[in-house]
Image: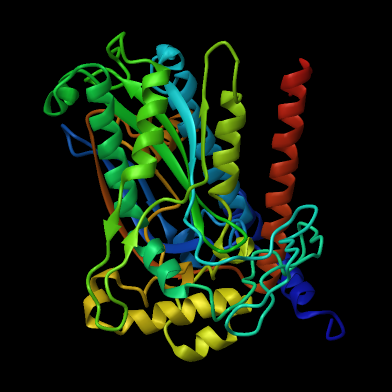
Length: 452
């Protein structure tokens, strides 16, 4: 036994424990979660009329006197099992807003709908993939003595792709401040789209909400240059959301024109700083607008939903744009496993975060995401269902719902998280088996086979 690796010894120890079968049931119930939360406590269900105890559960009889529950982390680099579940929920959430379902009427697929990509502006030339990176006939060098062009053909996985041609010319301050104001830029963009839609159909702008509503779901994605761009599904509904029709004179072309104009017009100004000045921020010139049509003439709705669902599970470390955890000291910045370009962006966040005029941006707290704040996926209230509703539906499907006319008393406390080395190995195997079984079931359904 002493010659075995620690992980193997720990796995054998767990397997020899008399309560191992029950522990295995718990791990399987979490889907093989890599970092389960450990809870201690009890739940008592009482008859609402008589006060009779109908059911009582206590962790004192469980292995280690604790119950394991999912961590629910969306990042695949942290918990593959929970990220797969989150991706599945995201797919259904996005798809419901495109095709209906989950209490959203199927008529939404016939509404004006767009798949829009908004990008960050240029903060300086970076290496890129293609036939030639940045060819220049006249050569030339910047004021810092570095070449202004690059004649190399970079492979997509080349570490140079996305890195500045000159780090001294690159606008790191503008990059970070654009990230920290991106959410405000989106808000102003959405407001301007509504205004332009109202004008295009002859409505007074203040009356737009009485006739139509703009619904959307958007996901933020980091490009190779570590700048965020936004993919958004934008849909035009009636005044009460998906259950009502928008004005017939509001077409996909009207929506396209409004989005195109708003993307090129909206601006956000940063607070004045003696060290930086006042910056004017806007969307980049690269704009992609693709109509989503019910007749299939355009991007496939399922493919769009799958793309969004796939991206929300990626962590910052997986995309090479930051880290998956906050950085609290300068030492952590210098030792973080990131590229020189990303490290400079993190340092810029830290430096700007120390200026009082930018205190409200909390740049040091968001240095690990390069100043970008907020959720990777956000949606308007009326776009579709919610994650909470999807989880409740899953709980109901599994029979984990409450009984009417009962009272439930819960007393729980947090007592830890994660697995021992051997437990992590077993949990990873369970997660892999469950994923393989789901894939086999999907293939059987798609081919009309037997999934029993």
